[in-house]
Length: 357
Image (cartoon, rainbow, N blue to C red; front, top):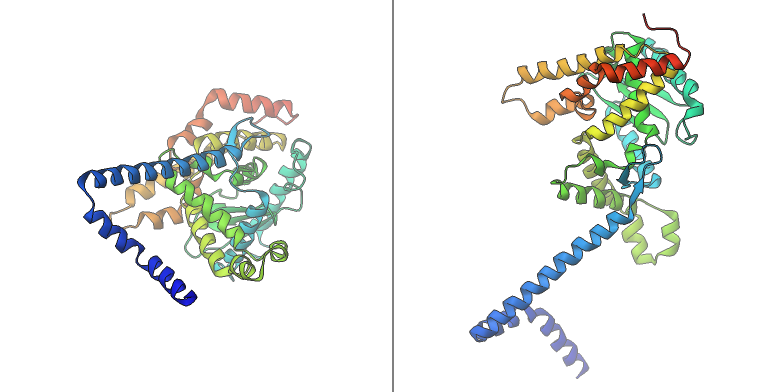
């Protein structure tokens, strides 16, 4: 009888849906209407429950920025960001193997000198000794594809630039100083924590994908603490599946590579960058020249682009220009704004720097 009972239960599980459909067909018209209404209400309640759960989750991650007093959704804790940067750095080392400039190269020495000067002259104003100190160094990729690309690895204190992007500065230390100060300012403001701030309200699905891919990337990463707390079965599923972790990482990296910093984040980054430059007594007027070159480069590529050229390939080539807002007019207008530049020059003068010639 026990075996028969288990067999009947198994049959009931297998035939549940076909039997339910047959019963629905045989039911009366009123019963069908009632069933459809009931199921519809259930689905609506389920959808609203999912929405409310996500709203509560996002609200719990809403923080007030320590520097700008702006409210933002903190998607990435430091632990998850460090994991992402570790995986990203490993990928970049493999992708550009043999294409890194030697530390003795002129461009590397120039960038490192500027980077250390910016940090040393601003260290008393930067309240983040964990991420910002003079141990930062520059890595330059001599890319055959000539991409305009930059990346900061906060956990390892690396600023990664392509030679094509450095060459855009024409060996002008003041333009190069802005390029470095801008990247450093994103680190000071910890913009890596809030990729959701760069999305439009209509990009809800992309935001959800970023939330889940970043969290799953961390969950699937081998973790000794979790191994101790989980049973053998879940330990194997959750903490050892690097294949699943890499899929989530690739998904997250791909989404970030197609994302531009919002105008709000770029404005506050440029304000901090100009302060860093002013305290280090760089010529802040040269920034306009760099921004204009980036914008003109973008316009020239757009004019020469044909329909056969893949937009994703162009975006990959001009990654820095897209990501940091040089593909629109706001950036150039900011540095052409006499009122804004007058304030920056006055601030530079108050820092005890010699007048700009």
